[in-house]
Image 1 (tube, helix red, strand yellow):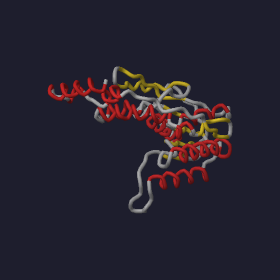
Image 2 (tube, rainbow, N blue to C red; image 1 turned 45 degrees about the vertical axis):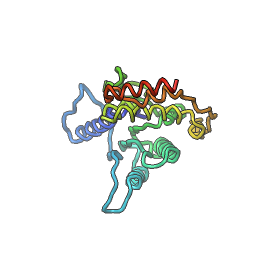
Image 3 (cartoon, helix red, strand yellow; image 1 turned 90 degrees about the horizontal axis):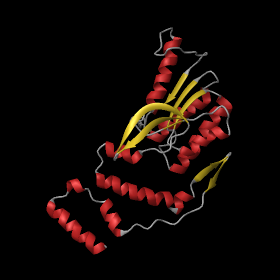
Image 4 (cartoon, rainbow, N blue to C red; image 1 turned 180 degrees about the horizontal axis):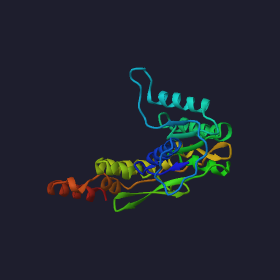
Length: 245
């Protein structure tokens, strides 16, 4: 299982593994001090997200079709690369499908598999299968941004840094701040508190918690980008905050 932030290098890490295997089996040199590879019969990939407009297939249908091909044909000598299975549908459906696919590959296909995911619940699969392991691509927060270290470390990632990546991509600060407030609400919302949590072979519901109460002044401050305010607008905001307090 490979976890880590978007743009952290998960897909690159998987692709380089496939290229090294392919180069070695062609008799070429590989970019490594040393490498020991067993026999690989085929390399299967399910990477990227795109629909098939000409064929009338949605992104999720393309994803499932390619995954089905892997599950039907991969052997214990195959290399399988899976990138974020289940992201094309609802959270619960996607998580359940990703878990079932991972288990099938472990129990039936027994293929050499690199499985990148943002579903942190899947990282607990290593507790039930000794042949499964977790690694993550490291990143650290710096100020209001994020620095990608591109180091492969043992264990699952601590968070996904999705909002930091959105801000890095140029999403307005006011939108990112609104997303942060909504994230806090969603994490403690009753619906998400009933999301499936890992427990052996089953998913169990977690207890619900009340929604946090955000003070109007804090909510207003979070929605403001000071760099985009004129002096007159800043004065108007100040008067508004004084009334809210």
